[in-house]
Length: 94
Image 1 (cartoon, rainbow, N blue to C red):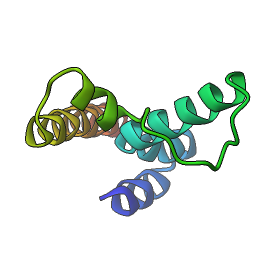
Image 2: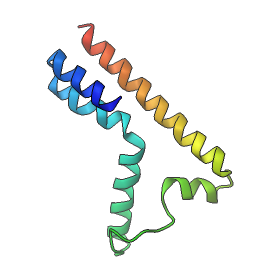
Image 3: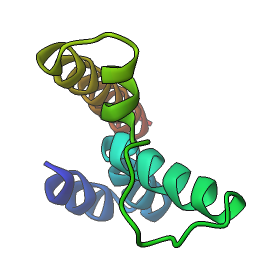
């Protein structure tokens, strides 16, 4: 889906949107990764050392079951994907 959206954006001639759409679609893993890097940097931990402070771990600590945590992350990803499609549709209609 990310590749198709990117290719579609390039074909439409909107290079900026071809760059932004995949970032929106991959919002959850990108935000989680960036947050982990910044958090580890400020806590003076090795950036590549694993820890239990990622989004899914935090949801489990808040009392969500594993299935609920995964479904919540999926729901957020679906919302971001739909917003990317709406942005792409809005751009292509101009």
